[in-house]
Image (cartoon, rainbow over all chains, first blue to last red; front, side, top):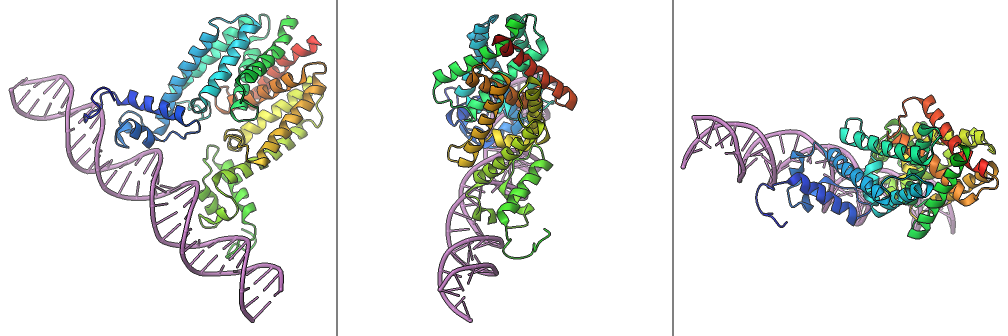
Length: 195
Length: 195
DNA sequence: GCTACGATGTGTACAGCGCTCACATTAGGC
DNA sequence: GCCTAATGTGAGCGCTGTACACATCGTAGC
């Protein structure tokens, strides 16, 4: 808006579309993210985004990729290199917190099937997977790393979605954090005793 | 189709819509389940379903409720009253198997937010929750039942979605079963040692 | 400094969607 | 046998994604 919004050529419509999409997702938590709405918000004709995104899916994938980056940052912020159960729990809480703070974005990231064609998204998935493995190897030394990191990711991811979908009450942030914490601790007890 | 498809009044359009919806979901795993498509499949005008469902959401909720019933049956079939880790693992595998066998239905069941208004769906959720608690109390005696049943459900649910969304490879059914099995076992090790 | 071209944005159009409303048809109680 | 309420039809509105022809403009080559 600030810079020459009235020119025929926008300047950086791609970025503007992504920004508009993010705003729409944040404003209406259950938005369907229509391409036309994005175009309107960007102050541009309905078909202009097609110069920058092959179709709606491409836009959505780009938004999802951004989301992965932000999720990663949040987890890192929760704890840069978790190595204890408490650290892990903090990261888990941050993961669920992110899902509840950005429900529409989180859905976009995980609900729309990960097209093997979208290299961006595959890379992002691999990054998360690697990140989790690293945590698990430090926090659960001696345990089977592959099975356990799968289990940990699934546990946290499942917690996020069950809260997000209203299967677990998410109205009280503290209660959610406590619940996630408890679940992770319950899970950990095992392998720390097993080694 | 078999019975008097050419009459003005259908006879049992509600059931026919549900059946049509299920067929569409099974045929196109990534279907969006349009009301009009359901009507077409049921051999009826586009607006006829509105006599039996308030809106698209109501139809979807009804389909989801059916799905909950079938999921419950499958879990029961996997093991009627699981009490060991192996039993629990078998149930977990059945859960993930159901998700992968009926991806579109599973998405309908869990992705669309659970409107507190839909008593059917809330009841179904509560039923699953209770079922899981029962299992956990038998399989993990002495552990904190609430935290653990949350953890177990989240673990299994997360495994289902990570496979469904392509975050974990789901191409080989045996490999999936093994992975789920391993995750549940990893999880169990803990609390059985803790007590 | 002009010109031609490629990149970018516009406008129109089409089919499909959810949903509303006026109307047609029919089943079942009196 | 009629009347009413339930059920199905059809036209129509505004939304969607997307294809297409056209308009505008930055810039590279002369």
